[in-house]
Image (tube, rainbow, N blue to C red; front, side, top):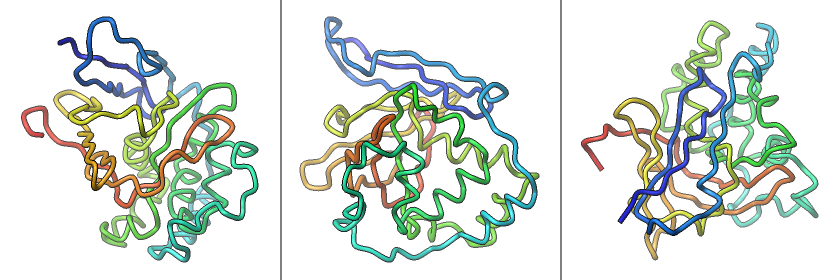
Length: 219
């Protein structure tokens, strides 16, 4: 058996992420692509006023059922990923964090991406004071590091994930992927609760938690 991997760099401090798992040496998929982006090349600037406004949009409550998300959108492919996320009130906090981090311009329309978007309730596991701290301009780099765990610069449908894959998120740090017939796909401890919402520049998977990493010695 040979490990299959991709080495995307998500637009945050030029930190590499690699997704790999067991596959035959002859197997080739869309996940074999490699993409590199530089924060200095793709990040848009932001003002303190913009960050303050984004912080005021933080909500820890979902207002619609998962099955109802995006039902008011006749064709999700008419929207790019960030615009699509903004159409759902359940993702208003994630959208506000993307705005505060200034990474929307990195999710370009000419490439394909995968976004794992936590719901508002997913962020309730974090102390409100910590959320407010992350939204401050002086903590922008730290906010970007949180968000980068939720973005892959490849379009990966939920059916492409397999059990025991891992996303490399830094030296000796990984995001574990689990696939279970009952629970579906779990990424970094977050369950994919609404998969495969297609946008013009990729696919969005709604998750019920904030993605976390583990060390290379734990699974």
